[in-house]
Image (tube, rainbow, N blue to C red; front, side, top):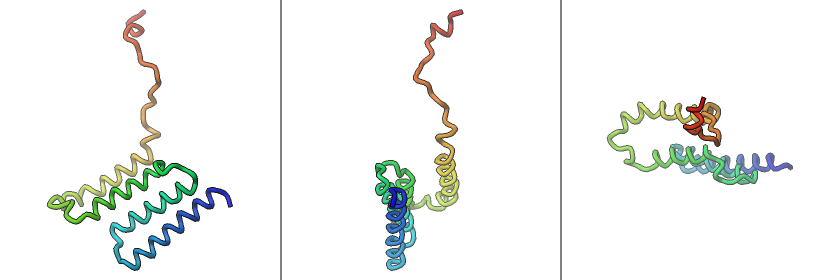
Length: 118
C-alpha cells in the first residue's frame, strides 16, 4: 500500500468515525465542519505532509467556531446571513484562483537611476 492510499484510508476512516458521532449526538451543524476538517488534517498527516498545509481544514474549523459559539453573531445575524454566502463564494474563488492570478514579483527592484538613464 503506497502512502497516498494509506492517507486516503486514514482520512476516510476519520470521516466515518466523525459521521457516526454526529448521528449519535445529532449535532450536525456546525459539527460537520469539524468532522470534515479533522478528516482533511488526518489525511495530510498520514501522507507525511505538515499539518499547516491543510489550509482548507483551518477555514472549516474557523467557520465551525463562528457558528458553534452561541450569541457570537448576536444582533447582526440578519445582515450576516445575507452576506455570508457571498463571503463563502469569495473565499472559494480566492482559493481556486488566488495563486494563479497573483502578480509575479521578481527579486529585482527598479532603480530610479536606471529609469532616468537614456
